Image (cartoon, rainbow, N blue to C red; front, side, top):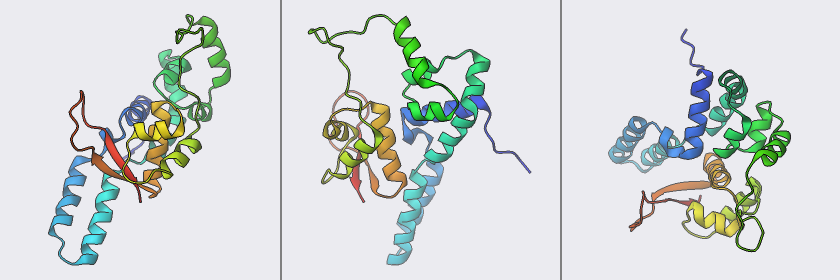
Length: 200
């Protein structure tokens, strides 16, 4: 029987890709097949079930990716000489790193001692987003009426790192409390259009 367990490097790569862009790991062929089922359905119940299957196909199993990362990241990092601070820089949450076996608090203290002085906002204070928990972000997202983007959620929550905001909203999507609507229409700025979400 084939072993589908990813290698440590693959587990780390997939989780980091998920944090960077959750949609990058969606199986496009499965989404296209599900969309064809939606288009072909004529009975309302069949269409309802096909739409549910389409929504599932668009999701990434965040829990499975997180579990694989927790189980293998420390082993991979020790073998490759990668410090925990590097994972923090890439947006991996402290609780995930702690579950993977790192002493994140000690690593942060060591990083602060060995890092250059932080940039300031012109008044001698460090310029950074306020620390906002995933629970705070979820509460902010559920308080928004109508479609919203990750930036809208961050503004409503009063801060939060991009990785924290993205993780919180994707967990709401996975739980069925929020749905992903797709790219925002009328986007003309640099880069691709931000994804819009809405309460289910």
